[in-house]
Length: 134
Image (cartoon, rainbow, N blue to C red; front, side, top):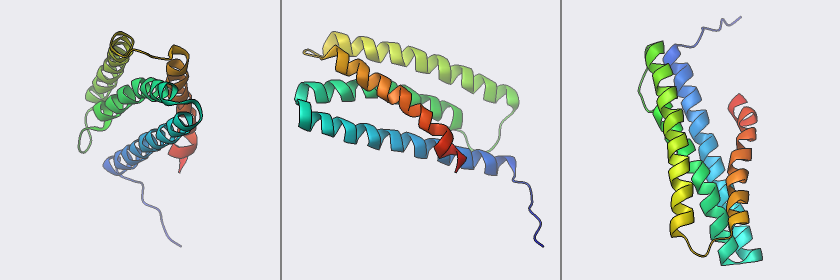
């Protein structure tokens, strides 16, 4: 019989970090291929509007993951909670700034496709429990 040793805290963090970044990479590829399909079917305006919408959700998610998992090793619980708060507040501000910049600077823009891309990226987070389980 083989005894299973419990994983160390740093091993658990490392495994979670890999899973989260693997999920973010999957989101990027999925968004890229869906936007390529939209470019092909509906045209350039809809394609770049979709990818801009998805990017305004994905870039803040990448920032949040970096804020939470950007450290080596283990940290005190207080520092972990602080990094979650900083990450989430930064994600909210970054999302608002990116959406504002897109609507101010990008002309023409198909707003309905932009928000479809934004919602697509947000809804793709529903895949995370399946991916993070493995």
